[in-house]
Length: 289
Length: 289
Image (cartoon, rainbow over all chains, first blue to last red; front, side, top):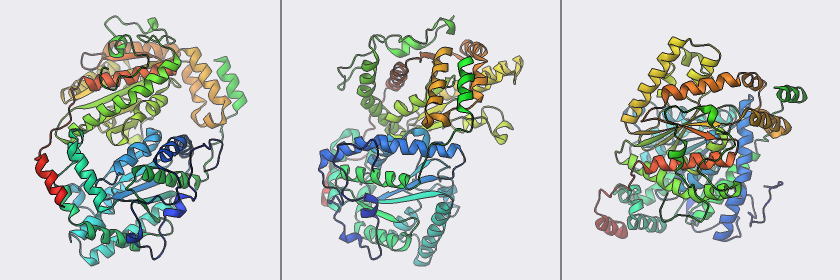
């Protein structure tokens, strides 16, 4: 994160991509949702860093978009998974929202429709993958089909095994086509979720975000953690590693995901496209027009 | 624009919706692209107002989104038309970009594909209209089919007349379905366009935005102004009036469009959806979970 726009905000001591990507033998249970890996600052510092890095993120995204207009295949796919209230919406609003909307392709996956259910689980996902030059964002994703389906037994072990394999094939194909895949699980604690659900109930402006079904899913907390662990074991690959972002502190989760996006964009070695016309000649044409 | 979040920034003296909506007998040639109708402040004031009103715009958009989740049909469609370099991209980045991406549905219409050309001109438009609760944004639109087509003679007078009628029918249908339509022409002067094209040529980071074809279209400036005048004469209706926003000053165009969006949202009388559950009972369920 070097560059002309380097700010005076407190920065990460270690690159979040390196710090948060999981490695073989990773155990979700070993991550403290209250922690702020790699970041020495406090909440106010995090807020300053988020604002300070917005322009860097914006510039990189614009370069990606510009390259896409000139035949580059590069693109980003950010996949967000989490328990309810973990802050996916905040990431979309505060991190993704800083980029130019014309270069962002956001899809929020809900419970599948009847038509979607009549197809393989990747059918609706494939239709939403980002175009060249775009930053695609999945708010939930194909991982629902190996998370909630596993927790509720809607798919048996053989089917789950098939899906893990299909996901790895699918993501490998995206990566080979020029997609940098950033997979993020926002990790909150069970107690933190309770606090956030109660806060929603305390604020009439947030009642619309609450559903009585949320408490039912919450009862399966441990089974969800097991299902996430399985996802990490089976689908964290070299081309599409998982990152577990402690998310009890919303401000940390935001700078962490912002850092992951910046690192992914920087990894694409983006350049402004060179003019395919004679600049001096065009200057004269415009001046004379 | 009253409310708790009223800021100390210099505000509009007259509501931009009332000031900028065109009225019968309107002449585009009477609008000074350098002017700042209804706004007494200068550039720095405009920048402060834009920032100060962001949270108001965000809150209204979230209410719209929330209502949409609970069965409301309300939605917004912002249609942006302009000559090249007039600042549509800046409006998308700086005004639209302040809203939550999950509630915004942006479509940039380019030259139609062969498949799109094989259908009526409204076919691709219909597919992009905003869903309930969404703010749809058209960067260019069905108006291209009565602007560039008129300028280049790709449609004759009878066909153009058919299209004006089809557009009015289409927009009336959207309005009847709950869509508040905000049509905006960003109006720059021919000299201002020249300056901006030269500025693009002077900055290698902006070469990708320049195309030699821009100078060719520029040669048809007067014909474009005539085509816009015709559009205003034929398609400014009670349910979908046109607004002409002077845009030589980018900062003014941004606060003007922001003001139009806020007025349109306020006109929808939005409320946070009421809880469809027993709040106290849910509090106890969550606390016990």
